[in-house]
Image: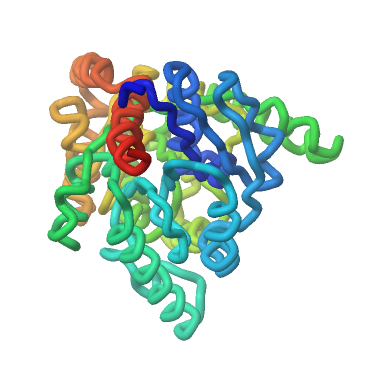
Amino acid sequence: MNKQEKKLTIGIDARFWNAKARGLSRYVQNLIYGLESIDFHNNYIVFLLKKDYPSYKPNNKNFRKKIFNCSWYSFQEQIVGAWVLDDKKVDLMHFPHFNVPILYNKPFIVTIHDLILLKFANKENTTLGSLAFFVKKFGYLLVLRSALKKANAIIAVSNFTKRAIIKHKPEIKAKIRTVYQACPKLHKRKEEKQTKSTKSLALTRIKQQKIKALMKKRRYLLYVGAAYPHKNLERLLLAFNKIRKDERYKNLNLFLVGGRDHFYQKLKSFKKFCKMKQVVFLGFIKKNDILEELYVRAELLVSPSLYEGFGFPVFEAIKRGTAVACSKTGAIEELLGDSAIYFDPYNVDDICDKTKLLLTNKELQKKLVRQGKKKMKRLSWEKTARDTIKLYQEIGLKKIE
């Protein structure tokens, strides 16, 4: 049989499938949909948490799903996970994050999105006590080092991430491939509605109506993402406070979209200290058409992060015609080039000045969006899927020869 005719059975760890639209969730969903659309040769087993099992419905007869009901970052994942996966007949596993069970000894590929926890792994970035934090950090490093060492190939989502991995472990340079992602498609989740109570649905509708009303009444800057310390939102709030001192922007608002977790609660306390009534915490938004409209109506998207391995929201904003002011750090400049205006994320005055510059120049906004859309044409989930399949074939076929 010709080498190219050999079929592989590829397992994909999709336990992040519905992780509140976090970057990992978007990566897993869009990659699998991309693979489904073009690969009618290989066979795939998609491993899901029990709660997410109904949410994924294969659209390709070569794809089937299995339950892998071990929570991510858990001892169960590390101890039981290897046994569960080892029992399945796969030629190659793809882990879309570093949390590979350390006892898993079959061929696998791992995707590394960033090394944030190496750079920002300190006590203020967690709600854990000192001892628990130390244990968690030790476990993280152990799992990461095992994954990098044992992986047959490593996917880096940007050259920035690739360089960071090489700096951390130069001896594995030959195993690393850069495979870019693309602007996430905001997929519908009809299955979720069926499991909600009438009361929960009513509360969701009320929230949606309030957000729609706010969008129509107010001018606003938009931030979409988590509130972890490296996201740098305290400096964004300070910069926004300075922007509003300009008479032209006294009625400007800042809408923050993200989950109601410990870090957002901490940020709310900081907001009260700064006395900024125009800062609106919208929480996590599940309805994709509302998120779409938030992007479309925003004056700008502002992304002040100190570190990004890729950064989906900047692409989502540009795709919907909204210009971006962002940090000159991480992978965003590599990907956007001259399609955004950049500021020093450590300098509140620079965040303020560059954001105001873009706010006052509509022609510059249009130019940046046009340039950004041209750059985005080079990135697609089909291309991501094709590049990933090439790596599956390269690694998988070597192992079954």
